Image (cartoon, rainbow, N blue to C red; front, side, top):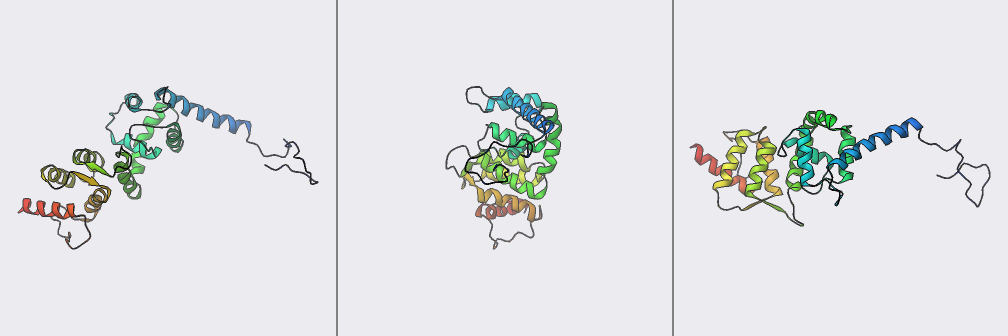
Length: 228
């Protein structure tokens, strides 16, 4: 910050502690305490060699939270972190989430999980979370597809509680069809749109002329035959 001065000077003068704005001691102490708590918690689960929370650390975290690692709220926590690599949390990602949730201990984090779920399930947030869930599972560089088995598991976790019937039928279809070995993002998002827009199970407003991914047209035909 440029020093306050009454006369121009070629040499930078020493900062005037009386005029330079500085954080109060109590503010600095509180911020430092919160960061210390967040970092201490991170260090408890991080791999000391890599400096990140790896799959083993996430298992330990889930054990402390008393939730299974397959609990959707762990995926929601990863979404809140904006975690880029499946099964790994960096310190910066950890700080992002815990600061947003205003927690720095396991009891506080456990208490915050239901509120996090409520936030994620808001329509605009959930659409972003649903897309994130697909991208989070892309574990290889330049990977753009997920295999059918992974898709079935992910659909059950992410959409099962909201669109149970649609998910069950679509998973059944995916398991018996022979044309698709993998699913891309467009197809993944298309099914979410299907769940939100198409009346079910009658599907009377589904139009094959509309711009649906072909896999959904084929799912529609398969289900219609099944219902006949």
